[in-house]
Image (cartoon, rainbow, N blue to C red; front, side):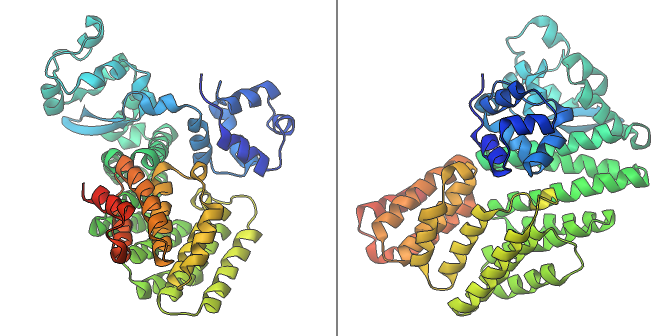
Amino acid sequence: MGERREGLVRARKAANLTQEKLAALLPADEKSIRAWESGRSEPRPHRRDRLARLLRISPARLEELLREGTPADLRGPPSVLLPVIVDGRPVALPLDRATVGASVLGRLVPALGDAAPPAVPTTEWDVMSPLSRRSLLKNGLPVAALPALGIGSAEHVARALENPRRYMDKTVTHYFRRQLDQYKYEDGERGPAKTLPMTLGVLDIIDRIARDATAEDQRDLLQIGSEGAEFAGWLYRDRRQMQDSLYWHDRAMEWAQAAGDNTMQGYILLKKAQVAYDERDPRRMLILTRAVRKGPWSLPQRLQAEAAQQEARAEAMLGASADQVNRKLDVAWKLLGDAGPIESPLGAHFNATLLNMQTAICYTEAGEPRRSVELYEKTLKETQFSRRDYGFFLSLMANSLALSGEPDQAAKTGLASAHRAAETNSRRTREELRRVVGVLKPWHNRPDVRELREALNS
């Protein structure tokens, strides 16, 4: 049995819906609503799009909320890249945790690190015989063997690689989108080291299929590929591999342009502006955010609000007064306040909690770290973020505390951040913490400060 899905409950209440009212609107049995929120069951796939619309969240966010109540999901078999022979050549076919766990492969995967066959029934290992780990990785698995392993849906995807015009359909595009949504969820809990290889595997397959697909299928594939490439850019950004990050953002832009997706093009410019912030390049930030706000992108209002905040941050870094920065932030808050139900999955992540975090960053950049600390203390809650993101915002709070002349509290907050950075392999967070240590140099002999420095050096 799963655990209570508090995030799903909060989303329902935020949409001003009781369990009874939500059941009537779906329509569904009220007992089903209670079972979903308690973690005892999940809504069937055909109900999920309407449920997401009623809760005013994106389908991807709904999937995240449904997974929150099933912590065992993160302890199950890992996602894998399975070598499959397609048209005489091996292709790395991405399989998510749920697909692996439901198949025979779920019992084979843990033993793929060994040369000998795993301890599972001989009949099941015979499906892959005479493959050992070494021969599997060298030679790949014939497409025809996939149904026998219980992963027939993946066979259809592999066949689409072989003949896109014959096998490409909505099943394949849905498969890729589901894979990427899974990796985005896992990223916040596990970090880029686990999710990047899988994401790149999906993008490689999309690139292969799109070349020979029909025009309509090609457009769908490139749209999904653009979102996946932007995510890959983010993963490299978290690893502090900035050239790779920019490469994938450029690839995302290329695919968005080829798909005719104007909204995605504006979104990618916004993400490039965030990379410019990481590199402490406020002039480039300003150029990009102004392009986001004034360009022909038809951005959802939530993303317009995020862009206005980003512009305020760039101006703060360039020396704007606190009053000037506040006026820009007021624009961001008004845009967010005027936003209706979520218009696009691309803006689904942006809410008042995140804008509060970004407002706190602006205050620090504007020379008001104490005001930033007050906002962090009031609004930064672990339950509202993934493990990685919470650790990152803790590092920013530690920096504001250090700038406010509170070395012991800054070091303690930094240590809490460092633990989460280690768990999720977030180099971006660790880099922020090194900045904190630099600010704390006047207090380098204090025990807490010394412990933070040692934690980062270990």
